[in-house]
Image (tube, rainbow, N blue to C red; front, side, top):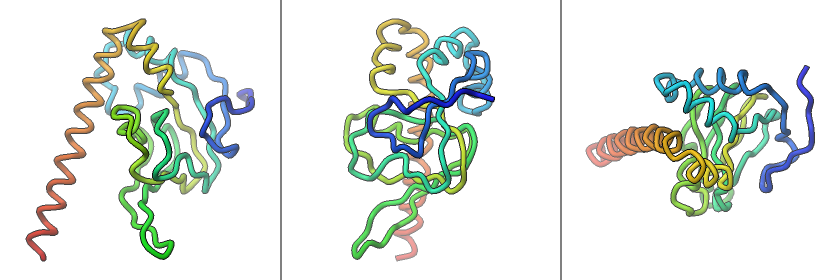
Length: 174
């Protein structure tokens, strides 16, 4: 059974707790995500050193719309609902993501506030890359960082294409 310690990442709620795992286990979790399956093994091993695994309770909000974005997460287990706040406390669902998907990457890259709120719909695990660790990765291992950023850029491009398609469908219907 893994050792659970107190959370050390500012901004994460107490319902998200750090879990100790071996580096090999973290490498396997990274490679379980389709985004990283073709990534060089050495670069995945380097990346694993900069990620921390966290246990997340059902209903836990990992971040709120408008929060400062100082980490991204790779969902290892569980399902996350992303939504935007609307008028009169209404919530508009933006997306649902599951194991192998990233969340919070936009705020880490562009430094802007979070564009949506992320809530776990069931208990799960998430690998966290903090802004500080991201900066360390860039400086200490530029090749591995470039490999990671290439995959992140590809993901953002795919999401933009999907959003553009959805917008075009809405404009045609209206």
